[in-house]
Length: 137
Image (cartoon, rainbow, N blue to C red; front, side):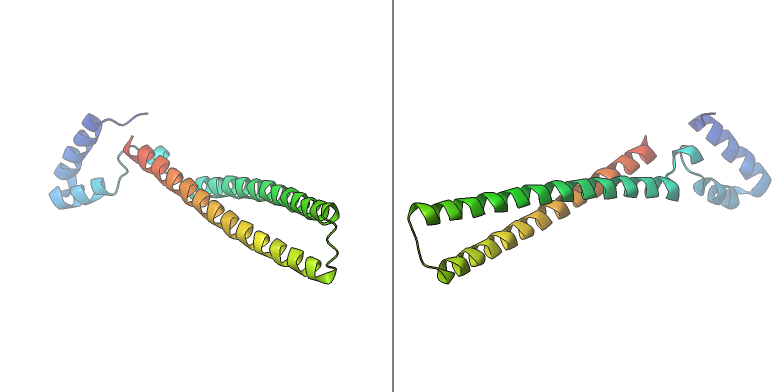
């Protein structure tokens, strides 16, 4: 059953007759504007959290796979360059390669963290807007 403004006003008038103006106003203020069915419950929020967790896990897995593939490609290119130019620098080349890989990994990790936090903020903002729109609508 949908509660419209006319029904709320009639209820408020009857409460004023029975309880007085101040208690009737207090009671009406404690009721949700669209009925109890429009409010989010803890279970609703837990389901949203589970969906966000699943999305972030999938996103993390995709990023991990892409970064692993990227690391393999860079490693293959370095190996190809080493053979192509016949660089025989030994451990110095390996140290340089390890340093470069470390820097690439650190940069990618920082970028990934930023992207994930931005996405999380976007999801939370969108969820808040949806809940606010549901309460207003």
